[in-house]
Length: 121
Image 1 (cartoon, rainbow, N blue to C red):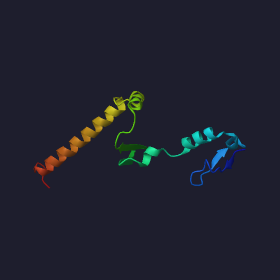
Image 2 (cartoon, helix red, strand yellow; image 1 turned 90 degrees about the vertical axis):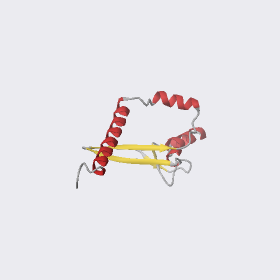
Image 3 (cartoon, helix red, strand yellow; image 1 turned 30 degrees about the vertical axis):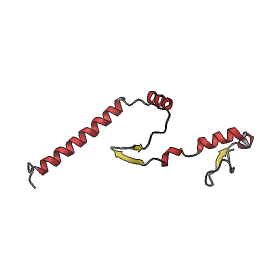
Image 4 (tube, one colour; image 1 turned 90 degrees about the horizontal axis):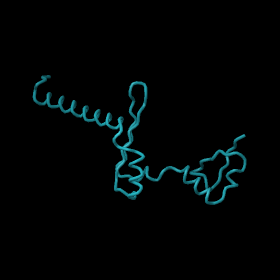
């Protein structure tokens, strides 16, 4: 049966960690530290000057959009590794970009039509 063990090294603001028996107590300091890093919230989530998070309802599903920006702090090796594991030119990325450009174009045309009195109120 699983029980809640609260450990001062592993707790985050009183958070409990479910484990079997004394598994947590049997870990050495390095493994405890590694486990603590794995369960804590990523440090990058709150340190960006630009941090926009949206949840968008579309038909019967929810989609999310996250935009973060700031000064580049990653090494060149890490950027190259992430570029190969998360390529920019994918079908869905191109479809998203096409949708954004199309939406902006439609809004601009509606604004121009209203402004130039093609459509009268």
